Image 1 (tube, one colour):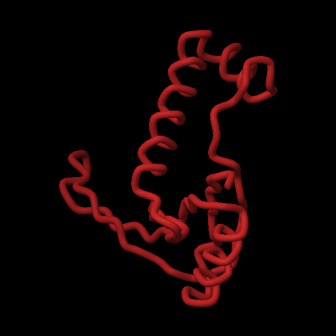
Image 2 (cartoon, one colour; image 1 turned 120 degrees about the vertical axis):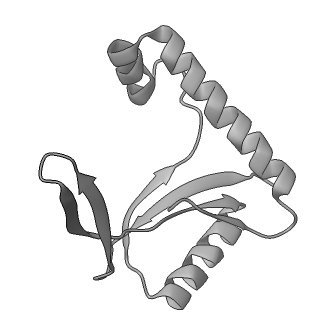
Length: 120
């Protein structure tokens, strides 16, 4: 039984929130509207992930925008080398450790059914 983890980002589907912030220069609140998008992470076997994703889409009515694998990047992979060039070797190693620890945490929470984690 091979456990995997995927992160799904969904289109906002017309959901909006109002953001109010105090503006010191104008001495008043500024109100702005922005779209709310959702993201979930599903942990389990491939069959469980696919079923949980289908069930989530049916229940929420959301349409997927993007799906990414949530895994540690091996040395030499494009994403690892990109992070290494941009932030340095230590940051690339640290990011892999963070992802690895998160996957271990998900594995402890996992019990015979897919684990869905709300990210936003």
